[in-house]
Length: 199
Picture (cartoon, rainbow, N blue to C red):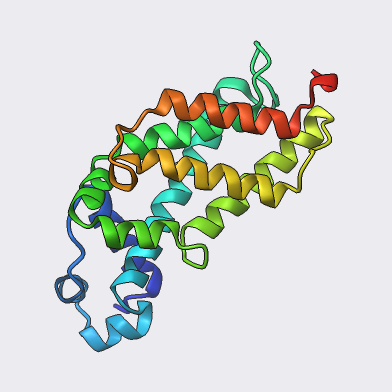
């Protein structure tokens, strides 16, 4: 059976989710392919880690979107007026912060993990920024809002600020505080999407 690039990435994602260190030689053996084939398909260890983390991030983002639909359907706001994007962002951060595999990775390989997770040209951050842009655009259109800044700029700021809280224990020796993150990020997004005159 031919082992595809997607097969390798899914295997990496399973290992990362379980908190298992990525050993490329062992992964190649587990998949029944040579190290040469492994590297030709997915690149070096940073590349493999980035692809696996992107897959996990994509799944987490999708679960947050699905959670919104299950709870609120096609509405753009909660009954108390909170925008969908704020709810989805908070769910995403909560799941990332609560993932044991992610915490083990950050604790064991903080330098490598943060480099891969926060690289603006890497596999994870640019996709997450694009996902935020898409959601902000959908919310602005559905709610009749006119953003005060370009949505890619807003999305980049939100993702970077979110990273600073999600990984604050490593980046700044501070306790991860999701409640503070939610307050600050909600305030930032509301300020950019919901000018006072439109509230």
